[in-house]
Image (cartoon, rainbow, N blue to C red):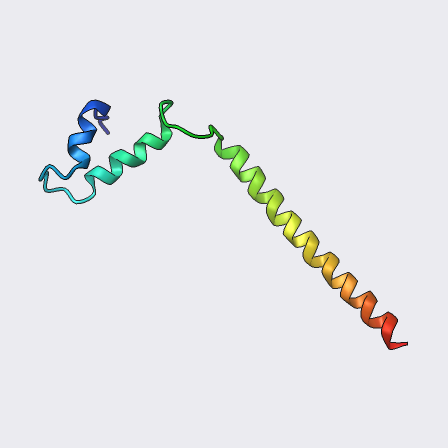
Length: 78
């Protein structure tokens, strides 16, 4: 796969009549993986760990909510 120069990407993203429908979008997606892109630099491993921690936190809240509902229902019924 050949890489295009970023200086020529502005004319390609404007349409330019190249005939290829997704050529401008593919070039914009490649900009996310360059060092010149703005924003946070987070590795995929960090994103995976953060996602798993979030899933674990939501699951823990779900289980604690079940315990809380069980205890409050059994305490008021007696």
